[in-house]
Image (cartoon, rainbow, N blue to C red; front, side, top):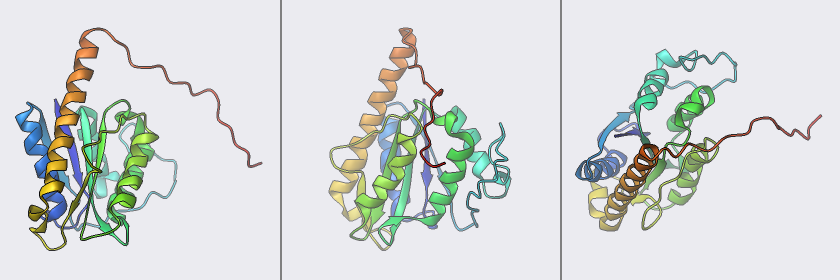
Length: 207
């Protein structure tokens, strides 16, 4: 089993990355592999609603790694998306990236567990956490929590190391993710099918 993580920070080795590593190293102790994809500083296009999505993913995905991430997601069993907090919100780059990932390939994530992680100097973490959870909720993904909201505090690189409770929360998040993945695997082995999904009704009150 493998958990795919996304670091929405422009700093590949900043506090957001540190939080994700804490999750990943605990996953390894639980017998689960992990990989962190760093968005870095490369430009990321917004979704423009062009409707040109295909089995490959986004028509613009080869330019900034969206389709590469989608291919990795096909093979992953669970996900953790981490973001720094900018003006009480996730980074614009992770939102642009995930908008295109989920708009073009949301079915890839169905019934796979997801967890959001937000990192900030002080405020805005819970709002950012809530925004990232929206991607899971609309995509039929179980949401993994912890012993507190999945938050870590730190501004300058290295400060997350001082947030003992935040790192503890990351480890408990990893344990919960591992437990769910193992339960899900046991369910598959027992022949329990995934739930059916209805798609016949779509109500639109705007005429």
